Length: 413
Image 1 (tube, helix red, strand yellow):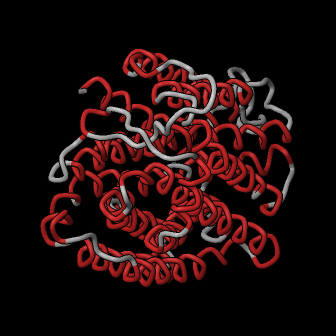
Image 2 (cartoon, one colour):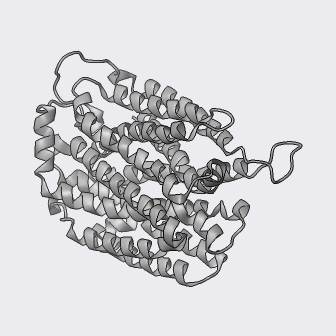
Image 3 (cartoon, one colour):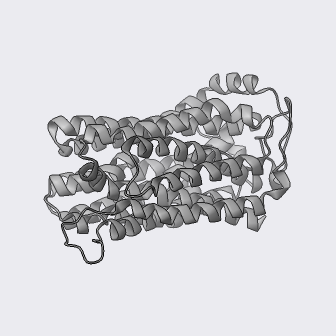
């Protein structure tokens, strides 16, 4: 079991390195391909396409594939995407966009089943700690991503002038190596659930203590029951708003600081690392008090703190103040994901848990894709400064949507 949990945490770290690097790379992508913020938003649209594909196929695939095979498929898709991104001297823009669909599809398969495995492999008293661990691993990857991507993208080729084109695409050799290691760990740790099952089989996506597979109804019946469960939609709304502001903030903050605050690209490229570092610290420090003093009360309090620091980020015209504020914004929003998954694992009936989590993730990615796209399109006409009122609105919506999520039964607390 510890080996499987380590593999689960590493898969989230790999996903974090990929996701955390994009905000630092966007300014280079815009300038290298000669495109607008509206066009670069297609990267987020491609990501959503990957998550949507996963939602439509996940439950059906789990009728035939074991847990280890699903995780291995997810790892392989991510690794293939990173290999395409290392295409010298930078992949064609169409290929680069397509890799985001592949990466998201792979992450969706891994994230869904890892979350279900971790939530079902621990006692109710300890599940929030292990969920906090894997989501902290994700933020550790998001913290490492901007440092690696900014360092590589801002380094001029040997013997060339500082104005030489950036070789930002070389960064993707890092997640390529991590992806290969992720595949190796998955196949080693989950080798007991790798077989492919021909023909219609019972559902393998619901996991009990120890990660044992249980039988369930057909994929179509699971999907229908999931979509008729009100708590699934309410929790999805929370994730829709939360991921919307998290991805928008992390994805556009560098371009905002360069374009609006006149920051130096080589230096402000590290600001997303502050946001990710804050999230990492929040996911390590805050899960225990959140669980102890009540998830509903504490997440509401964190939302209020996020709103305060977002207003500081917007209204104080200083890059240092902005960097500190967005780091604190990350800190207080850090426990949102694991806390909401923990609540969902107790709200959803066990037989639809994996299907429901997959649906919630897809709805989250609608927000995580839609609002960065909206910000990019509006930014191409009104300027990237439009990001600020968008973030304020999303934080308020996140707060309201959390209050709509029902509390799990008291006996399961």
